[in-house]
Image (cartoon, rainbow, N blue to C red; front, side, top):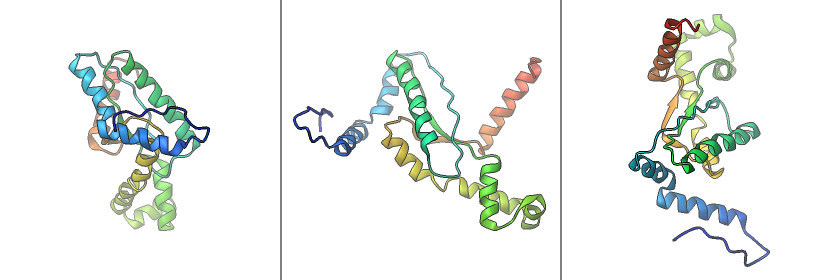
Length: 178
């Protein structure tokens, strides 16, 4: 396959086939990573785009899909303007959504019942559940045409991530901004 090109030769266009052809071309040529490599080789300045990650507690819905287009458009624009834009996919693993899901599964509720079950065991169940839907997310986000690095994803439950947030908070505190 040399390039995805779709001349309009028939009023019966096959959009799903066109989509698959474009995705195959991007995979074959590693187009996303190549766009980053080229900018780096040119010594392009970085453009950092912080993308608030979705909760890792279910499948994407309309709201995720809509915001995904925005989260892809801005980094692509700055890439086209010659900047290097690293785009790592992230997972929001903290807070009530994941805890509520596990409480439902275990048929428990509240602090006392979590403590009776065992906080360490409960946290382990939460950590396992975080990655339950990753394959579906990757498939859907890729089919949307969004370019992100799933292999170098980050999770808000990763110690390195939590430490970086605490460091930023500390620095802001030291500057009297908090």
